[in-house]
Length: 182
Image (cartoon, rainbow, N blue to C red):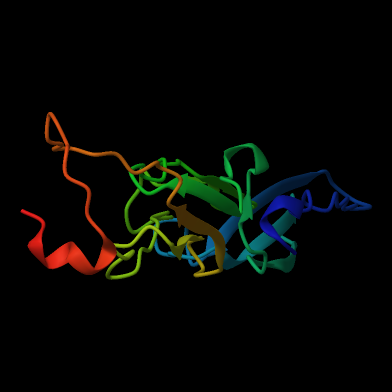
């Protein structure tokens, strides 16, 4: 079974034709919650019945629990899969959230236990016509991982402007006179 589908213990009844019964029920997990790092374990259920004459009967069964499901992104936290920005802008930061049937909510605030970080290339480029992928990933305690990738495109949408111009331009030049321009 999966973590989100744990069955309730089976109800059992015992009878004794001569005397009353003392019944007990115990359950335990192997490995215990403190001993495991992943939600893969066995739940043991043990029923015992004793009568007044010392007769004893027990019934034991188990359920295997296995986290086989990947985490799932919470859609409202996902950035768009494509983003276009101007060359003088930076891509916004996002906090992504995922949920997992066994581990609960996962976000970038718990390093090594569900870290979500964008993976950037060594250089996004220095020109204004480039693109790169940002990838976020998250893993649950059983190392089931998912990714979200965003393609960031950087465009040059800025007009060119003069930063240093002479006050008065009076000379006219021809293209073949460019070497003589001061």
